[in-house]
Image (cartoon, rainbow, N blue to C red; front, side, top):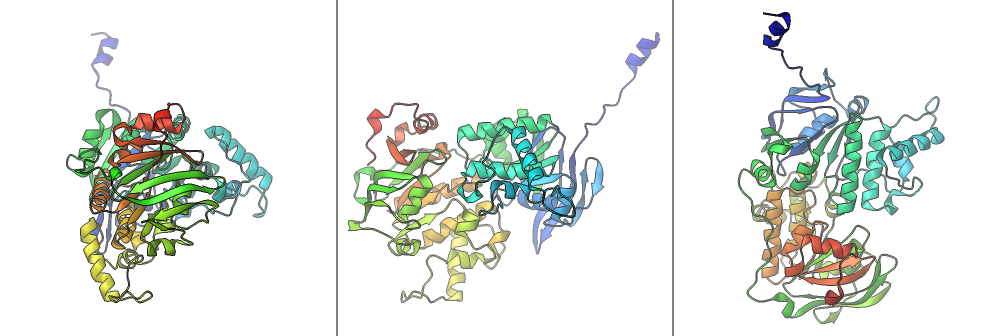
Amino acid sequence: MTEATAFDDLAVAPVPEPTCLEMTGVSKQFGGHQALEDVSISLSPGRVLALCGANGAGKSTLVRILAGAESADAGTIRVHGSEVAISAPQDATRLGLSFIHQELNLVPKFTALQNMAMGADRGGRAGVLDLRALRRKAQQVQDRIGYRVPLDARVEDLAVSDRWMVSLGRSLMRDATIVAMDEPTASFTKEEAERLYGIIDELTADGVGILYISHRLEEVLQVADDVTVLRNGRLVGSFGASELDVASLTHHIVGRDVEGVTHRVTAVDPTQGPELLTVEGLTREPRVRDVSLTLHRGEILGVAGLVGAGRTELARLLIGADPVGSGSMTLDGKPYHPRSPYDAIKAGVALVPEERRSQGLILRNSVSANLGMASLRDPAGKVGTYSPRRAVRIAREAVSRFGIKTSSVHEAVGELSGGNQQKIVVGKYVLAGPQLLILDEPTVGVDVGARSEIYDIIRGLAAGGTSILMISSDFEELAICDRVLVMREGTVTASVPASRATKDHLTALCFGTDSASHEQDPS
């Protein structure tokens, strides 16, 4: 036997692939609730690991432990091969970990540069801020991701996608080697999402490991190299993304098959019924211009458009959060001109806002207090009185009705998962019994199972005669609507019947690349 042949017969052990992050046997209990039980994940440099699971599956708890916001009851964490202790957020930053949360945690009054500089090396001596050095580094970071945001613009004046890029830029200012992204494209257009995917490719090419959390399963399969699924705090399994499709991934997440969004079928066409809301020439420059529409009783009316098209600004005018420049509104046959959201709620109009944590909830307050915020009054109907006992009873009924997962109605809302928080925001206004409910991105950050439950709530309200105005960047979910309005540059440019409200057609109308001459009647 020749030497070469002898070596050919030797079994060579494979070289293990290096990891930048390992969490092994992680467990965490809150009171009597087991949030995580013996969970392990592994992320390699230059790869994208998607962390998937229903709301309440344990994803947020796992990330909070990694970020130093919570401590694990058991388990180990290794970063670049070394076992580490992360007891505070500063520890995570020092180790090269960075986190971009769905609620971006930016300071609205600060500029983009000031937000990006938070937590970064000050660049000067004796702790003095070197603004020139920070600006140079911020420009280098923007060059790296190929996306420029005006550095001197205040964050509150930026579009949602620009704010997200500011948050990403802040991560890269800290020279992060591991970046966790939570629902990064929740409010992005298709074009903005594609730009982000390109940025992720650039980061992974530089060896950055990405922990990616998203409920958009098509997106997960497009972006991720590997997928880890959690369910009820336990590890279901880890898979190569190429092994999965949407149906199989959904089954792993929920534990059963889930039907997709289907077109609404009603015995009577609500668009032919009595009108509830009529809007004529509504204007507030520069975002809303000469908008006219009609909403019928029991109708689900969708509003599609790109970020910046004026959808949220229109909703704010309808509930009196912003003053109207010109135009008129009629509600149930009477002039309607709310001066505040309080006036709107009294008139039977409510808004579920896109920013649920900052605008729809008081996080430190209990489930009971949040659910009753829009509707509780004493049996005689007097405003300003509050019965804690009655609030608890109503909250328990709502928790059961809306399938809210909580250990108690006395638990702080800030401790719940995003999907359960969203159910509370929706439920709060459903309990108020509105005749018109406006939903701005109702399923952002919500898993496939909870989405289905929210759609059932929407359909049930419409069947009971409540009118729904539904704003969504997820054009596929607009399939539950009876009609869809398309907004572009502050104006309603098309009214599309349900039969033609496909994702491709709505996208083309939003970009102005499809003829809408036969769909111009916005009523």
